[in-house]
Image 1 (cartoon, rainbow, N blue to C red):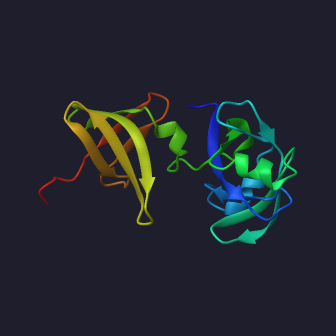
Image 2: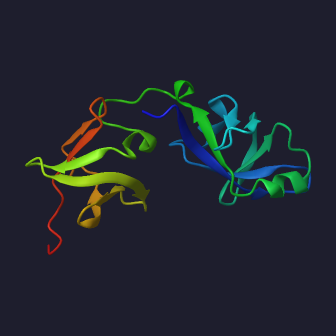
Length: 165
């Protein structure tokens, strides 16, 4: 399991006093401010987040050390990462995307399909992108298509739907 989890991104400046627009990747968008100081992906910067108001496409927020529109504009596209220990534990059948990335995937007969390269959520449920010897495979992240996720072993068992169905 990873030590940090991406919980959001800075979508740009909002206003002229250093406020930013945040895109939260949390189940409840406002929880992004609950996980302590957030770091940039490279860990070079840490920000305390204070939410100010809902805005189109996200949340308005003030970040520690960001006082001008120019400073806020310079942060556009920066992802925000929380320490894993600050996040709530999940029920047995839920997973942080960061924990699934890189896991090996095999079919129900044990044949390797590849490794999880990405996870997408376009609104109808998560989809695993698995990169393997046969190319890319997209698998719906449902109990029927993914009956087993073993975090401790770093292994997923999948029963992908036939491509010609």
